[in-house]
Image (cartoon, rainbow, N blue to C red; front, top):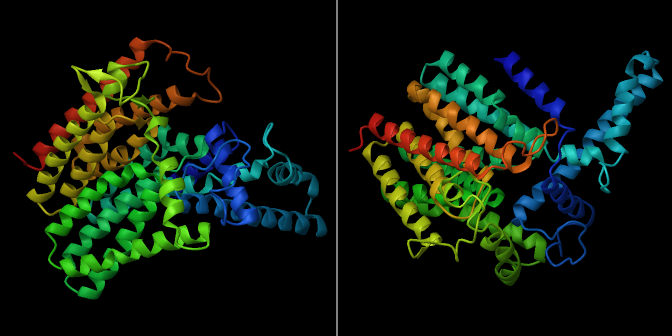
Length: 441
């Protein structure tokens, strides 16, 4: 397994310098400003090169931490270079290494004011998230005594295109959010089975804190909060669960306070929240291969576009309510890990396929959860791979690939509709199959 992890890591390191999306450059700007000037006054600053901040405070603090990581990496690289030069360790053989130090810490990325290393440092957490998701797959496979099957799933995940594409090339944080979300739900599930109250409380505190972080990174995972509520209703120690909510609330207050020098609800309500949750940025669909991309390949606006005389946003809400009903039935059928994972998949995948305002990357939680379900139901592996490949094509359609012509085959509405319909079909077939496998009528 160690060899697999090393190959996966080397692949991602090799791809680090290629294809940095404009989003990554914008995020680097936010992180560098926080690192250099601190978070105070960040959201009211009117001087920006690429764009105003549209992320929650905690996410921007993570971006600022990435700039600290850049400084530490550069220091270590420079230190090793000086050791080699001082002790005459054949410096000619390390010429490329010296060039890398210069390229990492001095040269700017293309026409931006940011160093190559600063852009690369933004991708460290996503890459580590890939590896930790693989570890989660291996952990559950060991727990269920199917190590060989788990290793196969782990290998496919680490090398299927969407995995390294989002982390090493695009530098997005969806895998980080998905990892924290799934882990938090698993921990909450374990806490409901814990007989010792102190241990149960600790698990709940860690679980809800991780979920808060996950939603601060990608608010789209908030919909999975319904599972916490459902588990709480069936909870044996409701009072303990209620107490644990103070942990994420305290973290929320603390992260907002550093940006306003006080607990400024006005700043959060009037400035931060509207920017983060501005649905007008996404419209009806934003390059997501789902049912709305199939019906309207050229897009539209969720509040204005109508289907059978009803605004599409209401159709999306109606679908989502039905999906939530099915997921909760699965969860209450059997209080097990596999039923929990089925519920997560139904909600996260269904929200992506049927809700309006979806972005391509929002399918990540569903596809990761499906990989974990393959540990329990090996028959799902082929459906998971098909869904993962379509997801990979979806990302390529959204942005392109540095070594390939951008959008070469995606200009046709017919192709967009075929891929969107196929992804929706795979989701529906998978949902029906897992419901049958957990024997929910």
